[in-house]
Image 1 (cartoon, helix red, strand yellow):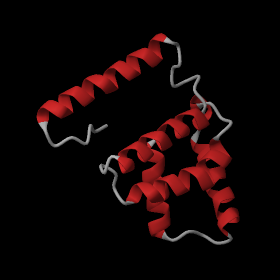
Image 2 (tube, rainbow, N blue to C red):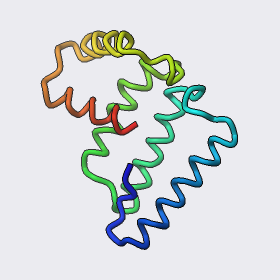
Image 3 (cartoon, helix red, strand yellow):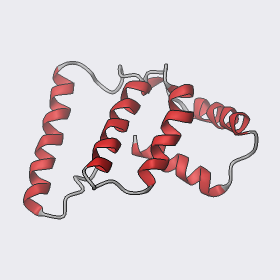
Length: 119
């Protein structure tokens, strides 16, 4: 995880803020095991939107937002994070191919993989 801050002092402040958000979620018992994929995805979409509006976003964030909304939330949305297995990911790949109407190009797969890893 990156604070995306070039200035060391700003990076330290952002790191503390990230740490405090994580600790608050843990204390509220919103652990990653009980959180749904959709909850995590929506939080990430907010982060991507915020970064873009603050001028810190990368151009690829637009692609990530599209992939999350078009493919990830419709397929994985109802699953808890702990329920996502390699078998389910294989099912997703078949489902995605049927949604796209073709087998995705390598660059599309890389974008989808990067968006998934971003979550």
